[in-house]
Length: 208
Image 1 (tube, rainbow, N blue to C red):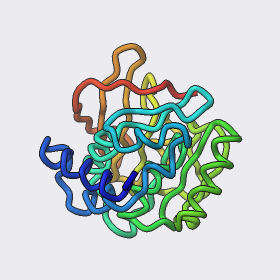
Image 2 (image 1 turned 180 degrees about the vertical axis):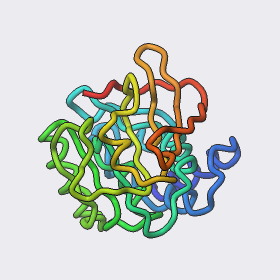
Image 3 (image 1 turned 135 degrees about the vertical axis):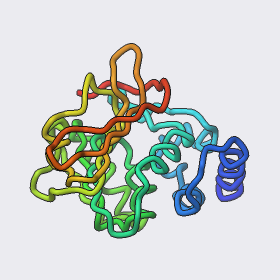
């Protein structure tokens, strides 16, 4: 299978459906080899616009959702970004293409997934992405404040420690809810409160 051609066709479909607004995000989606982030027996499906299982009851998000989230975060080169839910590392790699790998800090609940993601990112040239195993609800205070933070898993509400680690004026983005989830982007005000916008219903695995 010609994975590069399949990836380009996927990005063209996302463009045609209006899923990508930011040219930097388009370039990132066209660059990151999604097939390297899925189990070998699912690689033929890597460039279908659908979630795929990656083990430990977790999934790699559908490409359109990764693109939508990257667009909503309004990322710029040099932004420090906190990711909650590394999974296989694909979303972190897309983010790294825009902001620079050394500016991405990702927390994964499962030790095994964190280790595999760290090795995979390193092998694919994203070794400067920082990955640790731990409770994502607590964020990663050591590297705060962040310009942006996002969750790749659904939470009942934005975790307070994560919000506190985002600098005033920065964005935090997450699927909020349990059975019924809504993608919510919030800008942190100077007083710590959030100015929120909703972007429709979504379906993610739940934060652990």
